[in-house]
Image 1 (cartoon, rainbow, N blue to C red):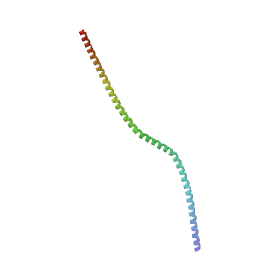
Image 2 (cartoon, one colour; image 1 turned 90 degrees about the vertical axis):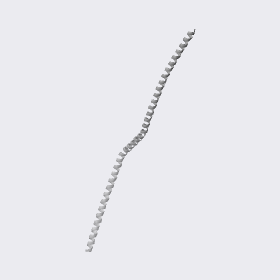
Image 3 (cartoon, rainbow, N blue to C red; image 1 turned 135 degrees about the horizontal axis):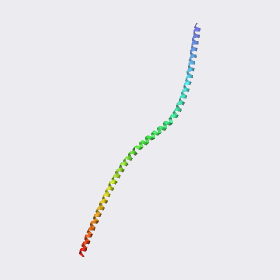
Length: 134
């Protein structure tokens, strides 16, 4: 009985060991399939990234250039507005001075005309005086 119990125990141990090996083999096979699936998924992800990545890079590059252009435009716009103001002020000052000059030239012409008229009048008086003396 002890021999048969020992044989039975060994048989059960062998069966457990055999089933353990079967489960280990199944797990190993399953792990191999999982690794293959992981590899395939990784390849698919790389392909997707390759499709998406150039667009992202281009978009990011363009956005960066647009941001740079915006940063450069702001001071240029301010400079343009400042120079427009300065131009308007200078033009206004120029027009004011030109108007003043025109008024001065007009006044000068009046004075010269008046002076000539007075001189002619004086010359005529002197001429009449000379004639009355003769």
